Length: 417
Image 1 (cartoon, rainbow, N blue to C red):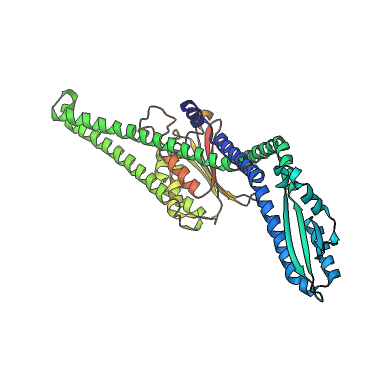
Image 2 (image 1 turned 30 degrees about the horizontal axis):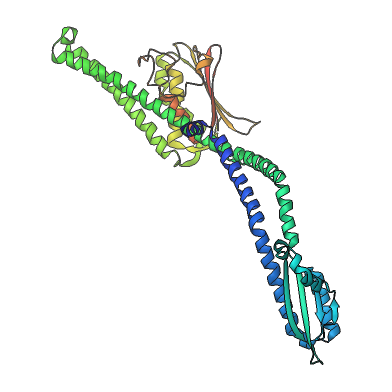
Protein backbone atom coordinates (compact mmCIF):
# COMPACT_ATOMS: atom_id res chain seq x y z
CA UNK A 1 0.00 0.00 0.00
CA UNK A 2 2.87 2.37 0.84
CA UNK A 3 4.47 1.66 -2.54
CA UNK A 4 1.23 2.48 -4.34
CA UNK A 5 0.88 5.73 -2.37
CA UNK A 6 4.50 6.59 -3.17
CA UNK A 7 3.93 6.02 -6.89
CA UNK A 8 0.66 7.98 -6.71
CA UNK A 9 2.37 10.97 -5.05
CA UNK A 10 4.97 11.03 -7.81
CA UNK A 11 2.36 11.08 -10.57
CA UNK A 12 1.81 14.24 -12.58
CA UNK A 13 -1.43 16.05 -11.71
CA UNK A 14 -2.66 15.40 -15.26
CA UNK A 15 -2.40 11.62 -14.82
CA UNK A 16 -3.89 11.79 -11.32
CA UNK A 17 -6.91 13.66 -12.61
CA UNK A 18 -7.23 11.23 -15.55
CA UNK A 19 -7.12 8.21 -13.22
CA UNK A 20 -9.65 9.67 -10.77
CA UNK A 21 -12.06 10.82 -13.50
CA UNK A 22 -11.94 7.56 -15.49
CA UNK A 23 -12.31 5.55 -12.26
CA UNK A 24 -15.37 7.56 -11.21
CA UNK A 25 -16.96 7.22 -14.66
CA UNK A 26 -16.37 3.45 -14.66
CA UNK A 27 -17.77 3.17 -11.14
CA UNK A 28 -20.84 5.15 -12.18
CA UNK A 29 -21.36 2.87 -15.19
CA UNK A 30 -21.01 -0.23 -13.01
CA UNK A 31 -23.49 1.14 -10.43
CA UNK A 32 -26.02 1.89 -13.19
CA UNK A 33 -25.58 -1.62 -14.58
CA UNK A 34 -26.03 -3.26 -11.16
CA UNK A 35 -29.08 -1.11 -10.48
CA UNK A 36 -30.66 -2.20 -13.77
CA UNK A 37 -29.77 -5.84 -13.18
CA UNK A 38 -30.93 -6.23 -9.58
CA UNK A 39 -33.61 -3.60 -9.02
CA UNK A 40 -35.27 -3.06 -12.38
CA UNK A 41 -37.08 -6.46 -12.51
CA UNK A 42 -38.67 -6.01 -9.07
CA UNK A 43 -39.55 -2.40 -9.81
CA UNK A 44 -40.93 -3.24 -13.23
CA UNK A 45 -42.99 -6.14 -11.88
CA UNK A 46 -44.49 -3.86 -9.24
CA UNK A 47 -45.12 -1.13 -11.77
CA UNK A 48 -46.94 -3.49 -14.15
CA UNK A 49 -49.03 -4.99 -11.34
CA UNK A 50 -50.10 -1.59 -9.97
CA UNK A 51 -50.89 -0.35 -13.48
CA UNK A 52 -53.01 -3.44 -14.20
CA UNK A 53 -54.82 -3.25 -10.86
CA UNK A 54 -55.67 0.41 -11.43
CA UNK A 55 -56.96 -0.38 -14.94
CA UNK A 56 -59.10 -3.28 -13.70
CA UNK A 57 -60.48 -1.19 -10.83
CA UNK A 58 -61.38 1.53 -13.31
CA UNK A 59 -63.19 -0.98 -15.56
CA UNK A 60 -65.08 -2.49 -12.59
CA UNK A 61 -66.23 0.97 -11.43
CA UNK A 62 -67.23 2.10 -14.94
CA UNK A 63 -68.77 -1.20 -16.09
CA UNK A 64 -72.21 -0.25 -14.75
CA UNK A 65 -72.32 2.46 -17.44
CA UNK A 66 -71.42 0.04 -20.27
CA UNK A 67 -73.42 -2.49 -22.20
CA UNK A 68 -71.76 -5.81 -23.09
CA UNK A 69 -70.30 -4.56 -26.40
CA UNK A 70 -68.78 -1.48 -24.77
CA UNK A 71 -67.31 -3.64 -21.99
CA UNK A 72 -65.78 -6.03 -24.51
CA UNK A 73 -64.30 -3.08 -26.43
CA UNK A 74 -62.74 -1.71 -23.22
CA UNK A 75 -61.31 -5.14 -22.38
CA UNK A 76 -59.91 -5.47 -25.90
CA UNK A 77 -57.94 -2.23 -25.62
CA UNK A 78 -56.74 -3.18 -22.10
CA UNK A 79 -55.41 -6.51 -23.35
CA UNK A 80 -53.70 -4.89 -26.31
CA UNK A 81 -52.15 -2.08 -24.29
CA UNK A 82 -50.85 -4.15 -21.37
CA UNK A 83 -50.22 -7.43 -23.18
CA UNK A 84 -52.41 -9.56 -20.91
CA UNK A 85 -54.65 -12.57 -21.49
CA UNK A 86 -58.21 -12.35 -20.15
CA UNK A 87 -61.49 -14.20 -19.98
CA UNK A 88 -64.91 -12.69 -19.30
CA UNK A 89 -67.58 -15.25 -18.29
CA UNK A 90 -71.18 -15.04 -17.20
CA UNK A 91 -72.69 -16.65 -14.11
CA UNK A 92 -73.07 -19.98 -15.97
CA UNK A 93 -69.37 -20.01 -16.93
CA UNK A 94 -69.85 -19.30 -20.64
CA UNK A 95 -66.92 -17.36 -22.15
CA UNK A 96 -68.12 -13.99 -23.50
CA UNK A 97 -64.70 -12.52 -24.25
CA UNK A 98 -61.20 -13.91 -24.52
CA UNK A 99 -59.85 -17.46 -24.61
CA UNK A 100 -59.96 -20.17 -22.03
CA UNK A 101 -56.19 -20.30 -21.53
CA UNK A 102 -56.63 -19.25 -17.91
CA UNK A 103 -58.69 -22.35 -17.28
CA UNK A 104 -56.04 -24.47 -18.97
CA UNK A 105 -53.40 -22.84 -16.77
CA UNK A 106 -55.40 -23.47 -13.64
CA UNK A 107 -56.08 -27.05 -14.72
CA UNK A 108 -52.42 -27.91 -15.13
CA UNK A 109 -50.95 -25.55 -12.53
CA UNK A 110 -50.12 -28.42 -10.22
CA UNK A 111 -47.68 -29.77 -12.81
CA UNK A 112 -46.01 -26.37 -13.44
CA UNK A 113 -42.84 -25.69 -11.35
CA UNK A 114 -43.22 -22.92 -8.73
CA UNK A 115 -40.42 -20.94 -10.37
CA UNK A 116 -42.49 -20.64 -13.55
CA UNK A 117 -45.76 -20.02 -11.72
CA UNK A 118 -44.19 -17.02 -10.07
CA UNK A 119 -43.59 -15.45 -13.48
CA UNK A 120 -47.32 -14.74 -13.97
CA UNK A 121 -49.73 -12.49 -12.14
CA UNK A 122 -53.44 -13.28 -11.88
CA UNK A 123 -56.34 -10.91 -11.14
CA UNK A 124 -60.01 -11.84 -10.68
CA UNK A 125 -62.88 -9.39 -10.49
CA UNK A 126 -66.66 -9.40 -10.51
CA UNK A 127 -68.56 -6.69 -12.34
CA UNK A 128 -72.03 -5.66 -13.47
CA UNK A 129 -73.18 -3.93 -16.64
CA UNK A 130 -76.12 -1.64 -17.31
CA UNK A 131 -79.54 -3.06 -18.12
CA UNK A 132 -78.61 -6.40 -16.56
CA UNK A 133 -78.74 -7.84 -13.04
CA UNK A 134 -76.39 -10.67 -13.96
CA UNK A 135 -72.89 -10.76 -12.49
CA UNK A 136 -69.92 -11.23 -14.81
CA UNK A 137 -66.55 -12.67 -13.87
CA UNK A 138 -63.29 -11.29 -15.23
CA UNK A 139 -60.04 -13.18 -14.95
CA UNK A 140 -56.76 -11.65 -16.18
CA UNK A 141 -53.38 -13.32 -16.52
CA UNK A 142 -50.31 -11.09 -16.94
CA UNK A 143 -46.92 -12.67 -17.88
CA UNK A 144 -43.88 -11.33 -16.01
CA UNK A 145 -41.35 -13.34 -17.98
CA UNK A 146 -40.21 -10.67 -20.55
CA UNK A 147 -38.42 -8.51 -17.99
CA UNK A 148 -36.50 -11.52 -16.68
CA UNK A 149 -35.47 -12.33 -20.23
CA UNK A 150 -34.19 -8.77 -20.53
CA UNK A 151 -32.01 -9.44 -17.48
CA UNK A 152 -30.54 -12.49 -19.19
CA UNK A 153 -29.74 -10.33 -22.22
CA UNK A 154 -28.14 -7.73 -19.92
CA UNK A 155 -25.94 -10.41 -18.41
CA UNK A 156 -24.82 -11.60 -21.85
CA UNK A 157 -23.94 -8.14 -23.15
CA UNK A 158 -22.18 -7.13 -19.92
CA UNK A 159 -18.63 -7.57 -21.44
CA UNK A 160 -19.58 -5.20 -24.28
CA UNK A 161 -21.05 -2.73 -21.79
CA UNK A 162 -17.82 -2.81 -19.76
CA UNK A 163 -15.69 -2.26 -22.90
CA UNK A 164 -17.92 0.60 -24.04
CA UNK A 165 -17.95 2.16 -20.55
CA UNK A 166 -14.18 1.86 -20.29
CA UNK A 167 -13.68 3.45 -23.72
CA UNK A 168 -16.09 6.31 -23.04
CA UNK A 169 -14.64 6.84 -19.53
CA UNK A 170 -11.07 6.88 -20.89
CA UNK A 171 -11.84 9.32 -23.70
CA UNK A 172 -13.96 11.53 -21.44
CA UNK A 173 -11.36 11.48 -18.67
CA UNK A 174 -8.58 12.30 -21.14
CA UNK A 175 -10.45 15.28 -22.62
CA UNK A 176 -11.52 16.48 -19.15
CA UNK A 177 -8.06 16.10 -17.60
CA UNK A 178 -6.37 17.78 -20.55
CA UNK A 179 -8.85 20.67 -20.58
CA UNK A 180 -8.75 21.20 -16.82
CA UNK A 181 -5.09 20.51 -16.14
CA UNK A 182 -3.61 22.71 -18.85
CA UNK A 183 -4.55 26.04 -17.21
CA UNK A 184 -4.11 24.45 -13.78
CA UNK A 185 -0.57 23.29 -14.59
CA UNK A 186 0.23 26.72 -16.03
CA UNK A 187 -0.96 28.38 -12.79
CA UNK A 188 1.00 25.89 -10.65
CA UNK A 189 4.15 26.30 -12.75
CA UNK A 190 3.77 30.08 -12.61
CA UNK A 191 3.37 29.94 -8.83
CA UNK A 192 6.40 27.66 -8.52
CA UNK A 193 8.46 29.95 -10.74
CA UNK A 194 7.42 33.00 -8.71
CA UNK A 195 8.21 31.16 -5.49
CA UNK A 196 11.62 30.17 -6.89
CA UNK A 197 12.33 33.77 -7.89
CA UNK A 198 11.13 34.98 -4.49
CA UNK A 199 13.52 32.62 -2.71
CA UNK A 200 16.38 33.65 -5.00
CA UNK A 201 15.51 37.30 -4.38
CA UNK A 202 15.55 36.84 -0.61
CA UNK A 203 18.83 34.89 -0.79
CA UNK A 204 20.42 37.58 -2.99
CA UNK A 205 19.15 40.35 -0.69
CA UNK A 206 20.82 38.57 2.23
CA UNK A 207 24.08 38.45 0.30
CA UNK A 208 23.80 42.06 -0.90
CA UNK A 209 23.10 43.35 2.61
CA UNK A 210 25.75 41.19 4.19
CA UNK A 211 28.58 42.68 2.12
CA UNK A 212 28.30 46.37 3.16
CA UNK A 213 27.38 45.40 6.74
CA UNK A 214 30.51 43.23 6.99
CA UNK A 215 32.66 46.02 5.53
CA UNK A 216 31.24 48.64 7.91
CA UNK A 217 31.53 46.32 10.88
CA UNK A 218 35.16 45.44 10.08
CA UNK A 219 36.19 49.04 9.57
CA UNK A 220 34.50 50.25 12.78
CA UNK A 221 36.02 47.40 14.77
CA UNK A 222 39.49 48.24 13.39
CA UNK A 223 39.06 51.88 14.34
CA UNK A 224 37.78 51.01 17.82
CA UNK A 225 40.86 48.88 18.56
CA UNK A 226 43.23 51.19 16.65
CA UNK A 227 44.54 48.34 14.51
CA UNK A 228 47.08 48.96 11.72
CA UNK A 229 45.77 51.00 8.82
CA UNK A 230 42.50 51.68 10.66
CA UNK A 231 44.38 54.19 12.84
CA UNK A 232 43.68 56.60 9.99
CA UNK A 233 40.15 57.15 11.24
CA UNK A 234 39.25 59.99 8.91
CA UNK A 235 39.84 57.83 5.84
CA UNK A 236 37.91 54.81 7.13
CA UNK A 237 35.09 56.87 8.58
CA UNK A 238 34.54 58.22 5.06
CA UNK A 239 34.65 54.68 3.67
CA UNK A 240 32.20 53.50 6.31
CA UNK A 241 29.94 56.40 5.44
CA UNK A 242 30.11 55.47 1.73
CA UNK A 243 29.19 51.91 2.64
CA UNK A 244 26.19 53.08 4.66
CA UNK A 245 25.04 55.16 1.69
CA UNK A 246 25.28 52.09 -0.55
CA UNK A 247 23.32 50.17 2.07
CA UNK A 248 20.73 52.95 2.25
CA UNK A 249 20.35 53.00 -1.54
CA UNK A 250 19.95 49.21 -1.61
CA UNK A 251 17.31 49.23 1.14
CA UNK A 252 15.41 52.06 -0.56
CA UNK A 253 15.35 50.18 -3.86
CA UNK A 254 14.16 47.00 -2.18
CA UNK A 255 11.41 48.94 -0.41
CA UNK A 256 10.47 50.46 -3.75
CA UNK A 257 10.18 46.98 -5.29
CA UNK A 258 8.09 45.75 -2.39
CA UNK A 259 5.84 48.79 -2.68
CA UNK A 260 5.42 48.25 -6.43
CA UNK A 261 4.46 44.59 -5.96
CA UNK A 262 1.77 45.59 -3.45
CA UNK A 263 0.40 48.50 -5.48
CA UNK A 264 0.97 47.27 -9.06
CA UNK A 265 -2.80 46.84 -9.54
CA UNK A 266 -3.52 50.38 -8.33
CA UNK A 267 -2.02 52.28 -11.27
CA UNK A 268 -3.40 55.76 -11.92
CA UNK A 269 -3.53 55.97 -15.72
CA UNK A 270 -3.66 59.38 -17.35
CA UNK A 271 -2.83 61.04 -20.67
CA UNK A 272 0.87 61.93 -20.70
CA UNK A 273 2.84 63.99 -23.21
CA UNK A 274 5.73 61.55 -23.69
CA UNK A 275 7.73 64.06 -25.74
CA UNK A 276 7.83 66.61 -22.90
CA UNK A 277 8.47 63.92 -20.28
CA UNK A 278 11.51 62.51 -22.13
CA UNK A 279 12.89 66.01 -22.67
CA UNK A 280 12.60 66.81 -18.94
CA UNK A 281 14.33 63.56 -17.95
CA UNK A 282 17.20 64.16 -20.40
CA UNK A 283 17.68 67.74 -19.16
CA UNK A 284 17.94 66.51 -15.57
CA UNK A 285 20.80 64.19 -16.57
CA UNK A 286 22.54 66.49 -19.03
CA UNK A 287 25.33 67.07 -16.50
CA UNK A 288 26.17 63.33 -16.47
CA UNK A 289 26.15 63.27 -20.27
CA UNK A 290 28.50 66.25 -20.53
CA UNK A 291 30.72 64.93 -17.72
CA UNK A 292 31.48 61.80 -19.78
CA UNK A 293 31.74 63.85 -22.98
CA UNK A 294 28.94 61.80 -24.57
CA UNK A 295 27.36 62.94 -27.85
CA UNK A 296 23.57 63.16 -27.50
CA UNK A 297 21.53 62.38 -30.61
CA UNK A 298 17.98 63.42 -29.76
CA UNK A 299 15.15 62.69 -32.22
CA UNK A 300 11.81 62.84 -30.44
CA UNK A 301 8.63 63.80 -32.32
CA UNK A 302 6.50 66.48 -30.68
CA UNK A 303 3.27 65.84 -28.76
CA UNK A 304 3.45 62.08 -28.55
CA UNK A 305 0.58 61.17 -26.21
CA UNK A 306 0.42 57.92 -24.20
CA UNK A 307 -1.62 56.57 -21.29
CA UNK A 308 0.38 55.58 -18.19
CA UNK A 309 0.89 56.09 -14.47
CA UNK A 310 2.98 59.26 -14.48
CA UNK A 311 5.04 58.60 -11.34
CA UNK A 312 5.93 55.02 -12.28
CA UNK A 313 6.65 55.61 -15.96
CA UNK A 314 8.98 58.49 -15.00
CA UNK A 315 10.85 56.09 -12.71
CA UNK A 316 11.17 53.48 -15.47
CA UNK A 317 12.31 55.89 -18.22
CA UNK A 318 14.71 57.64 -15.86
CA UNK A 319 16.35 54.29 -15.03
CA UNK A 320 16.68 53.40 -18.72
CA UNK A 321 18.29 56.74 -19.66
CA UNK A 322 20.51 56.69 -16.56
CA UNK A 323 21.68 53.14 -17.37
CA UNK A 324 22.54 54.19 -20.93
CA UNK A 325 24.68 57.06 -19.56
CA UNK A 326 26.22 55.04 -16.72
CA UNK A 327 27.37 52.11 -18.85
CA UNK A 328 28.60 54.13 -21.84
CA UNK A 329 32.37 54.69 -22.10
CA UNK A 330 33.54 58.31 -22.47
CA UNK A 331 33.27 59.99 -25.88
CA UNK A 332 30.54 57.61 -27.09
CA UNK A 333 26.95 58.35 -28.16
CA UNK A 334 23.55 58.36 -26.49
CA UNK A 335 20.77 58.07 -29.09
CA UNK A 336 17.21 58.79 -27.96
CA UNK A 337 14.38 58.43 -30.48
CA UNK A 338 10.63 58.46 -30.11
CA UNK A 339 8.04 58.38 -32.88
CA UNK A 340 4.61 57.15 -33.83
CA UNK A 341 4.75 54.00 -35.93
CA UNK A 342 2.56 54.31 -39.03
CA UNK A 343 2.32 50.54 -39.39
CA UNK A 344 1.26 49.59 -35.86
CA UNK A 345 -0.14 52.98 -34.72
CA UNK A 346 1.94 52.66 -31.53
CA UNK A 347 4.33 55.13 -29.94
CA UNK A 348 7.88 53.77 -29.96
CA UNK A 349 10.69 54.85 -27.65
CA UNK A 350 14.29 53.84 -28.38
CA UNK A 351 17.25 54.49 -26.08
CA UNK A 352 20.63 53.36 -27.48
CA UNK A 353 24.13 53.74 -26.08
CA UNK A 354 27.26 52.96 -28.10
CA UNK A 355 30.67 51.60 -27.13
CA UNK A 356 29.26 48.65 -25.19
CA UNK A 357 27.65 45.26 -25.91
CA UNK A 358 25.98 42.51 -23.90
CA UNK A 359 26.57 38.85 -24.67
CA UNK A 360 23.44 37.20 -26.06
CA UNK A 361 23.46 34.63 -23.24
CA UNK A 362 22.90 37.46 -20.74
CA UNK A 363 20.07 39.26 -22.60
CA UNK A 364 17.36 37.19 -20.89
CA UNK A 365 18.90 37.76 -17.46
CA UNK A 366 19.41 41.52 -17.42
CA UNK A 367 15.91 42.02 -15.97
CA UNK A 368 16.52 39.61 -13.08
CA UNK A 369 17.01 41.24 -9.65
CA UNK A 370 20.64 41.95 -8.72
CA UNK A 371 21.91 40.73 -12.09
CA UNK A 372 25.09 42.46 -13.20
CA UNK A 373 26.94 41.75 -16.44
CA UNK A 374 30.05 42.99 -14.63
CA UNK A 375 30.53 40.11 -12.19
CA UNK A 376 32.83 41.82 -9.68
CA UNK A 377 29.72 43.59 -8.32
CA UNK A 378 31.86 46.70 -7.70
CA UNK A 379 29.38 49.53 -7.19
CA UNK A 380 31.86 52.01 -8.63
CA UNK A 381 31.35 50.33 -12.03
CA UNK A 382 27.62 49.86 -11.68
CA UNK A 383 24.59 50.04 -9.45
CA UNK A 384 22.79 47.54 -7.27
CA UNK A 385 21.50 45.42 -10.13
CA UNK A 386 17.89 46.40 -9.37
CA UNK A 387 17.48 49.17 -11.95
CA UNK A 388 16.30 47.08 -14.92
CA UNK A 389 14.35 44.77 -12.60
CA UNK A 390 12.35 47.79 -11.43
CA UNK A 391 11.92 48.90 -15.06
CA UNK A 392 10.57 45.46 -16.05
CA UNK A 393 8.12 45.43 -13.11
CA UNK A 394 6.75 48.86 -14.07
CA UNK A 395 6.44 48.07 -17.80
CA UNK A 396 4.80 44.70 -17.12
CA UNK A 397 2.28 46.33 -14.80
CA UNK A 398 1.42 48.66 -17.71
CA UNK A 399 1.16 45.67 -20.12
CA UNK A 400 3.76 47.31 -22.36
CA UNK A 401 5.95 45.30 -24.74
CA UNK A 402 9.66 46.02 -24.39
CA UNK A 403 12.93 44.46 -25.45
CA UNK A 404 16.69 44.91 -25.16
CA UNK A 405 19.02 44.18 -28.07
CA UNK A 406 22.78 43.95 -28.28
CA UNK A 407 24.29 45.20 -31.54
CA UNK A 408 27.88 45.11 -32.73
CA UNK A 409 28.85 48.25 -30.82
CA UNK A 410 25.74 49.32 -28.92
CA UNK A 411 22.83 48.30 -26.71
CA UNK A 412 19.28 49.27 -27.73
CA UNK A 413 16.30 49.39 -25.38
CA UNK A 414 12.86 49.67 -27.04
CA UNK A 415 9.40 50.25 -25.56
CA UNK A 416 6.11 50.10 -27.50
CA UNK A 417 3.31 52.20 -25.95
